[in-house]
Length: 241
Length: 241
DNA sequence: GACTGCATTTCGAGC
DNA sequence: GCTCGAAGTGCAGTC
Figure 1 (cartoon, chains in turn orange, yellow, purple, green):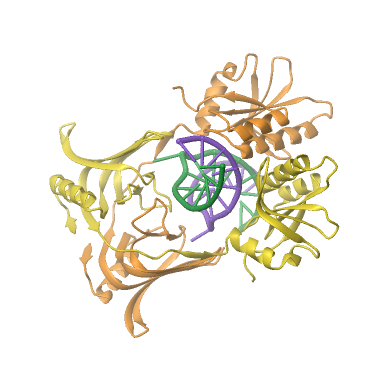
Figure 2: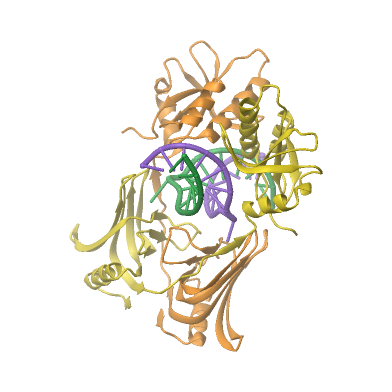
């Protein structure tokens, strides 16, 4: 279903019908956008593309950027109405949710295009090159980390949270491994440090706990932080080559 | 410009024309999606909505989720062609960039809809409730942090990075303030800790540096971490009420 | 171009 | 529902 240069009334009916039919609805036209919730924002009149998904998500896109300029997450209730505001007919799209209370309101004075799409999409994305792939690599060939490394657990709980890989080295020392799929900065080092500190405490006071950060590479600052806290780094990519 | 149930050839021409005219182009139809770059992914055939922006961004949306199932950031080169693959006519959308090398390829066997939109959008989003607002609040009324607090600098550089607010308390002790617009977890505490450690080092060895985390609230674990490292917490929201 | 940290981050898993 | 951390995070600002 598609309308070109519809009246606001016709657009309203089409959008309303599309939402009712659980279609993916798109509107293009001149609009203002108001958001209020976790933060609040206002966008003055301009031409934008609005997408309403049947799961309750709403997206307002300008002609620039990968990210929508405004949005609403899945689970929202969409409502559409056509009314008079400031002496001008206005198509009002409202998308609301609770917990947290959030409200997105798009007001059109001109609609160029309305479309509603229904289809089927059964398939799921297969993705590789993730942190999980890096973990698999190391569990299959622990020597990639270092000779004599023995993984004992993944997601092992500590008082600071779950450790990616928990194991021991050839001298029987406890090893905490933190994995990152890409080049790491200071935050990843702090994360590893929290786990090492926690585990040192959780285990006997005299236990030696080694911390190893595994990632393709590190920034300078992160490298210095690692050295400061006697943490180690092993360069590994999530996938071979 | 809109086409309904076009032939793949007609769709190809329309998309090509839209890209050439720097329009925002959308295509809805049955497609597979392949991505290869920082990671790699494959999505089998299903009905999806594809958006090509004139700045080079590409978005593939299913009927669920706020996030696109696949995408390409701004700055990519889009190309479209119609050719025979596996004995079937196929519309191929390719979006490529370098640094890093990334390639997104969407293959349509059926196109239901093609549209191209051109408009103007001069206005910028005004947003409030950000970390910047929280900073302004404190700089205008430093006593909100604590009586006698004097801000001396924002974004003050340390060997661990820039501190949100740098100042001193009524006893002349150095204070490092880390701001967060929302409830904080362990990562924010670690961040503050890095700054406090760095400044303690950067200044005289005998200097006392206080670290204060300012946010609407803290999680339990973060609260424990704060206590462990003698860091403080002040509850403040980015905007009044 | 790399680094750093914010974001209405979103998303998923675990509890 | 909250917590925690991953993400092809995106994005802006700075160097």
